[in-house]
Image 1 (tube, helix red, strand yellow):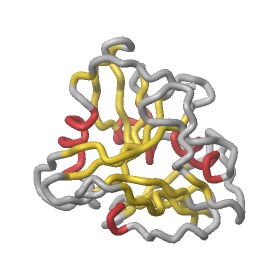
Image 2 (cartoon, rainbow, N blue to C red):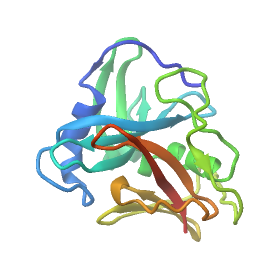
Image 3 (cartoon, rainbow, N blue to C red):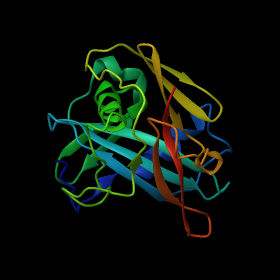
Length: 207
């Protein structure tokens, strides 16, 4: 169970992302002006790694992005290329923040969510299930071994995480996301539009 602390972060998550996003091949624009638009968390069974799927909107372009992030107390040399930055947490101290698409702990828990073996947690409340994040059941299951090799391919609007013979696809451009909800293995959820209304579509799919 992740405990959500009401405390300060320096820099903030959105400030970290504002510096990191322009280097991604799926980012559109120049200097982003970010606001939160939705998201959820997953629990690390060991309780060591924070896992958050942030949906952020760039007010400069209106585009919404899905960005998984992980938070660690100690730097992981094997994830050096996935480092987004560091934050000072008012309770937990230094937090090393990584691209969740490349963090094996986040990938394993995302696979568990797809397999129906984990449930999404609320982004801002401790020990609270988020029922708005829905899984379409059926289809093949994926192995979620923590030592399973992972390769990542970035596209213009998506990130493909290759695990064995299967691919877990993060739909990065949510305003362009396929709203289909009947494909086995899909994860769907809501986010806020430019006007502030709630919409929903596919966040993650299995290929």
